[in-house]
Length: 416
Image (cartoon, rainbow, N blue to C red; front, side):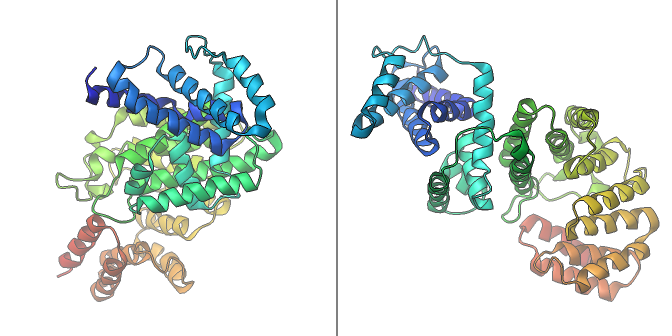
């Protein structure tokens, strides 16, 4: 096998199996931080061995075996753990073979689920949860995470190191939390996956509007979560939201990467397969029978757009009602701002302006360009050109994404 092919094989296996390997090693050693280090050592050895000798017949088993050998080496070095080493060595056997590696599908699924809960543990900061989730569950390298979030690699490495130390200091067990704690912890897991997707769907900075790698990784994590927790409606709701939102990606940017507004998008380019998957996930969320949560409601809004033939044909009254329900369930300035946009489409800009003005008077979203952008759009439609110009100029000053800024500048120019 050529060197490049061997490295590609390692990367492909790692991307698919890293979470299961780290999870199995964490269960094996009882030490999450150690398991992550052991998995990285196994990955490093694969990068040397596979290009030279060819990929093994059981790549995941090979990586797991190397990780377990490293675990034994570690325990061997720890004199206080001699007894445990003897037990582990006996179980593994000293011949180093990989054929007898036993993969218990149910246990492995539990391992991956435990990894997701640990990576999104409440004792960690939001930044640490994102970095750790992408690293140990998504299998991304520190360099890849750093590029995705436009921060130095050293920053990502420091976040991951601190996160592992924090988990160790808090003595977080490697286990799926009990049912009574799962709902609370699930919210943290879902929010991290949604945060990853949001950054991928609408980059907060940089020169690209969509970061497909991040958005795709979040979709993959959401699919894993629904498979692991099929009776949780919010997991299905989140997956539905991500699928329905991603379905518009092919039409959201033009040939040069510039944003294309919803009313200007060629809906024939929307991904119909993603829409079907999203609607199916939303139906499963409803079938669970415990009502839609915040993600499910957002998915229901996305579905309204997905099934409409045009902006004009969209059921805006229903969109407004769903936003009102969402505002009661998960109030936020962003929800209110989106509701204002829906109200403007259903009843006209004059009906929506008081909602926006109330948000502005409350001082919400002070550093975001969204409020000024929406207000500028409403005022433009109402013919209040000078006021619209001031708001659009403010939106341009606050906008950190170059692609979005171009759209705002185009609107400003159109005012004359």
